[in-house]
Length: 562
Image 1 (cartoon, rainbow, N blue to C red):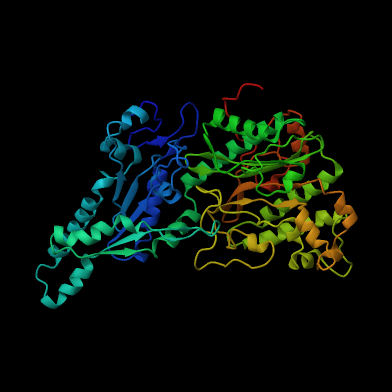
Image 2: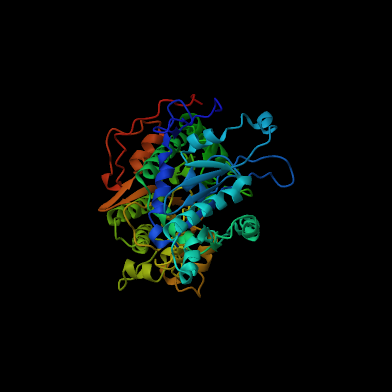
């Protein structure tokens, strides 16, 4: 085994880590996920064989440059394999697992390091068997032979009229993933081409006692996606770790950011702490470091706006960044004044967003509607805007009525949060049998409309933004919102940008656990910006449910002072 591989190979204690004191991910996390999928075998066709294809190695455009590989999410969920060009077979009714790996040429070792044997692959990823990808047809035929033998032994004396039923019992149903991602709109295309040669050749190459393979592209996707919605204890522990590491990376960034620095230097500080301290090579998504007006751009930081503006004294900074570790990521947003002290304008908006989090945490728990949580958060933000004099509330109307008419979507056009796990916007938001997307402003941006269940991990990220195009539309004479907005006061907030607070929480039977341990109150933020100690000695706001805030042990490997 490669001496640089920090994955142990003892079957009873195999784990992944980056060495030193970095987090150890038990590889039983993935066997547990496989068992969870197989527990649905009663909902699957008889003799179901699950085939999952991993991600493939690619090059950048027409060059030979190889980007750092990132595993396909469903495959990672079931196998935890780091390498590209692999696949997996799971016999659903027995749980037997076969990992299919590339048969590398000897030249591979020159460029990429020592080639693992099949036995090493087997020990490393804790599977029942390992075969080369090129042996796929033989593996399938072996499975069919075993099944045919089982049926023949049981029915040696069957009558002629029962042969048709026997043949159907022999059939192997291969379950392939195929289905839409409700966040991207992209469709996972099933790898049916993998089975085309086999389907056309097996009847002539092998015994006629073998019945046919049936390809099923409809059953697996909703079941496997639902498995990913409710996290196992191993998954929740890993997500808590990456969120705590993310939190401390944000704190490190806040302590060192200053006016006149560039936005990208904030991104650099975050990445440095996460990698140096926690071994996190990757972030889960493109870091957003918007300051001043850029804080109103929801997905700022993209290729055309690469966090490349200089931070000004008086700017509100909105930093949305999350660590990824062994395929699981976090997503945390902090908003703070660049100079470390809140102005009155910043204070009222920030406290409105913080109050929105508090209200949601008070509501959260098994059985709570996520749509209700979103609308409650909007109500708190509207209250702050009323306090600021931006929103006008007539004497004969209530804040709840403003929420119902969707005025809140002018200032928070995105949804309250999203499932989180292997993907930042994790799957399962709109699966069959659950509430459909609501076609109303703001609510249509919700990444799920589901009822919360214990075991879900989800972000809570209310925000308040002053987006020029939305403000212009809402204040036009033809807008139904025009009468509720004070244009003169709004003008004072044109350069404000926005504020968002985002935490990662676990839903429990009677509430929620907040994995995030960032400074959140104004006093906490200003304390950290002055270089104060964090984590703190006391919890100023227990209602934020930051259960590990006071018991968390800071990581030992602090980066060198800058």
